[in-house]
Length: 317
Length: 317
Image (tube, rainbow over all chains, first blue to last red):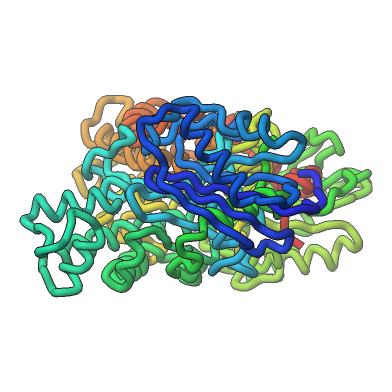
């Protein structure tokens, strides 16, 4: 690890998701100065999608001098090369995102990481993990992802995939997972899998509702027994996986974000109950498991930190 | 992390276990020059036990100039303070091992870590993980412990407890674990728990055998169906836990040591089968899961590395 000087100009950040793409301009102190959002186009082809991303960056940068670009993007990807094949962005298959950005912005660092890793970084840098040296950050949404800060530094692992808590096993004979495994946390607790399970048990959205975790949460809040059971099941799975992860990594805080975390106690109460059942060792009873605090901007903030605090959050070349 | 100069004299290492204690003298190049072993006395009291340890160190050091001491000891412990309460050494409860050694050897670094962490360090430094930057090292024995090297550096976590793979959950409604949790890997796959399960199913040692994993392995090798089922159960639990750990940490090699690993394919075949069932993501299919290679000296070698390669393996104060 080579100590580096902080950038001297503004930093651009990108958060590229299957539905929306956001671009942000950050000052050297890490403040978000300006942000623009646009729907992520579908079916336009790889170059058109990149052109949109580049246009968003131009818009948000204005006349600022840019000293670096940090990007959070859905996986999988080759890391640190930043060659991305996001599951929910079919237009990009092995798209050389890092190289394409570097060819537009010459001579400044361009750093691409998993979007869930960026959320974890953000929560450590500016969220519920400030002042700690060991954090697990999670996104519970369409998928279940995460990132790990250990001993004061982001951990990327051999291929940039450290933090994939969605594929910790919570039920050895549980449902098949899209990853090819079985009984993964994501197979039980992601929004779509949660809704599917509830539907199989006879739940359907209330009038005006949709087949989403939000509608399911509304039903649960109204006392629908299947919806309540669904959140109990997902929260319990989260509690088991987090207990396993904490006992393996000895983090002091777990930040749980993503759309489903908005369900609040519906999710966090069974999570805490199951966590307590599995986390027996003294050190594992100490961590704080808390809702993530940065909301919709978390991905951008973490992407900016890849550049603005690269000595802590960037271990790639 | 402060870069440090390598020590200029020989380094002493200690591996303190419930049954035996070993002391080793290492050259600056990491070669083990001399080793002595003695039974760990039981019931003598904390000071008498420490006096034995100090005598072993004097014996092995001879007239060598000593530039540091590395120690692996059973947990739990306060880390990095090195105040130890080993589960299987009842004479030491909150014993200030690091301070006691420092008062004998003035002015040189004294570093104490979990014994299973030292085995993981050894396998990374001089064993099956040489040349990698990400390793999970495990000891499957009376307990199930481990350590993690990620992004090229030993990870200790908030309280020095990172690496406790023995308490990753493999069976959500599984047996109660000594830790207070439920369904932990250790509750299923440690030697004593494996023997207990086999005994409950009707196994008993062959004539001349004992109630140990070794005798159980001998029965399994002879085709005893309960003994075979016991190893299948333990190997499967290991495969599940390792899949969870790999997907969370993205290591490239997993070194499995400890007495039970001596059972070879009896353990590693079901391990590999269950690992393949749970490790669906591409990056999780790549790691090598291999028997540890350093055998009985692994703990000493890792303890020495805490000093001889402290910039990689020591993050404490």
